[in-house]
Image (cartoon, rainbow, N blue to C red):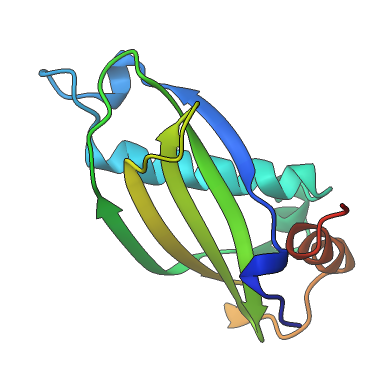
Length: 147
């Protein structure tokens, strides 16, 4: 199953920088961006009808196998932003996501990221070649959103 990025819609996950996201200078710690990106992917899947806890109960996990980030501008304490998340395509067993952290009101990019996940059978620690039905439905929803 493969879908092109031009067909995929952005899912926006809003956030506000809290004190625990920052260092003593009030600048966001680099690891907070990764946490926000994961939260955005989980919520995007929820919007497509897949609860991550249901996947876990089915014995499916989605570990990150590749991550590429470009830090362009820091966020600071109190800033409001969004994680723009898009499932660009699925290549065999790989889920390729694009995620950009931007201000709420513009496309200026603070952090640009590419994340690749793979579905794994938690019990046997093997790649899943066939996704659970609810995951197949979510993939179709996220890569071919209704107009």
